[in-house]
Image 1 (cartoon, rainbow, N blue to C red):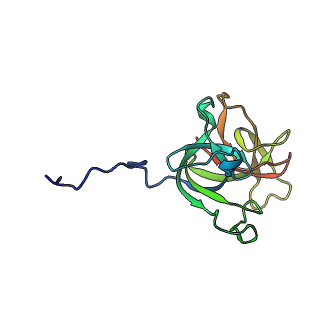
Image 2: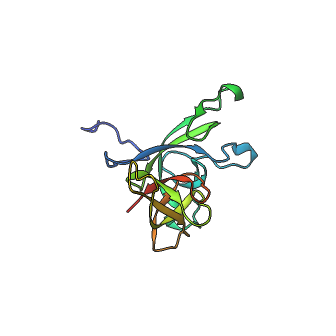
Image 3: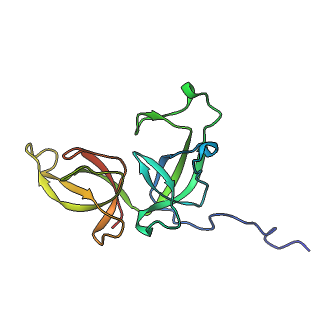
Length: 171
């Protein structure tokens, strides 16, 4: 007997908020034949490099998780010189995924004392700018460990001290 609402279906994602922040990232070590790990829809991911993500491991701290992969673009069919360009990263990529992020906004700040690496960061204060334009200052962020209670978000790329860094803010 047919079901009133059609046949039973199996989906990876059943429901999601419609106002979630989505960001596209390259996949780290996509070549599974060379020991890389692929990212599939529905997998939690973590930062692995500049605008690059990797699968979250079962042994990783939950605070490393930046979100869940909801769409992938496998670009393996392109020749190396024709692979689509990622202007955020100044590189070419073989696979990208769109991530529904735990963060709600991506902002700019500067790296505080020491370099900032892709991954968890904490707020280190507000620094005044010399020219007072367009704002009187800028937020400062420093690296954090995943277990840090002061974790405020994730750096999306590396930055040296005093350089601009994009932060996915999660508080």
